[in-house]
Image 1 (tube, rainbow, N blue to C red):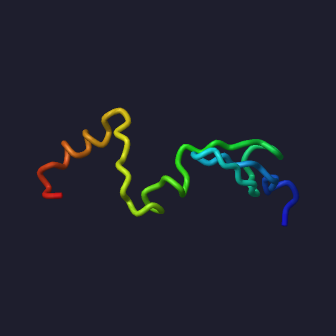
Image 2: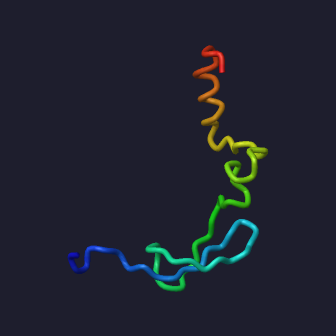
Length: 73
């Protein structure tokens, strides 16, 4: 294995959307940095059963629906 080709793997703190902190290993940031998540498994529709609605940021979802309205979705 070549020296200095792999990123440093260290412990960081991950702040979930509900405020809880989880310690995990990552190559992101530096040792002890905190990564704040906007979406995590406690709120993402893929893990919660899909009951949440998508946020239409900037009208992108509306634009998509209008563009493909005639395809019978």
